[in-house]
Image (cartoon, rainbow, N blue to C red; front, side, top):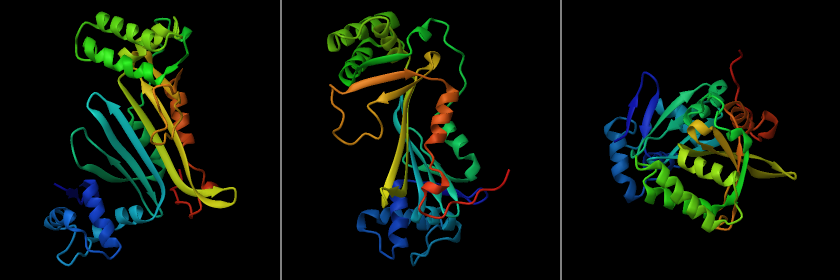
Length: 289
């Protein structure tokens, strides 16, 4: 069920509720499949009996209707993928966070100058100590997406991700990877097996905005993909390069992971955001300080 907190101007909404707002903003009656969602919004007072929108929604709907920058954050961990994001509007910036197994996301207004902090929070970016196990000797691993798929299958069969015998699971992963990619040798092979076993989550951030390319208006996209490998640190996924189009990645596609740290990842998140001169629309004013 949708809900809202007027004291903080925050909302819990599912995509179907956002779709209802979109139809009403366009002066349309929501289709039959959205009627239940419309009734839910009417019950809590966000939509009136005649389809009028509550004043409390003004900033959120303004940002959704005319976004300057759209940011998508997909984090995949133990409970599967969870989607977050940020909408940068002309007058307000709204951040939204999902939750594993929940339909609704929480939408809350944030200050523009906290945007990078908010993105770092969504991916749980944190300082970590430099690994003391010799991993610094291997800072780049090159294999294939097929090898990664077989590694995950082997890890699941070995119980390495649910409290089973870690050593046996690693042996199964190593054997599977060797069979899939005979060209991957130690020490990179051993490091890849350790990365798969230590993987906390993978995440990617994609930013999109209207800009100019070769003198013509065009949708501009930047993206970043990272592996959070816990005690083994952060690894940038250089290939497959984001953004990935449907059908682009095959088992033969190269997988390239490069060792990083929280400071570099922070800078790369910052670089995802367009500069003011890259935006066609008028830039959002930010408070001084």
